[in-house]
Amino acid sequence: MRKGIHPEYRPVVFRDRAANYAFLTRSTMTSESTIEWEDGRTYPVVDVEISHVSHPFYTGTARVLDTAGRVERFERRYGKQDGA
Image 1: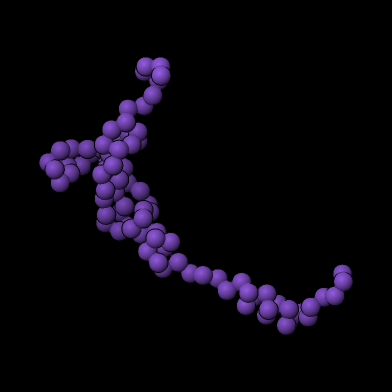
Image 2: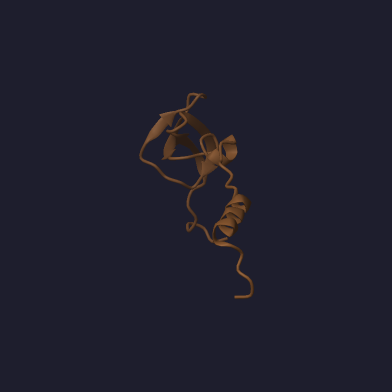
């Protein structure tokens, strides 16, 4: 690999403002803001709008659409078309 062309891969804190949740991971993201983590060290912090803590898919609050019921209601209302 060529030296000096890759961004620095370092510990970064991602903070989900909606859920008041933060987690430490490694990333190439950069930020001017910093935060003191639980281990007493200071890390760059990146604010995100949504994470696995607040996303409806992961929290189980996602709505499932009843597409079969919609199709049946449409066919009842407008009748099933033959041929055309």
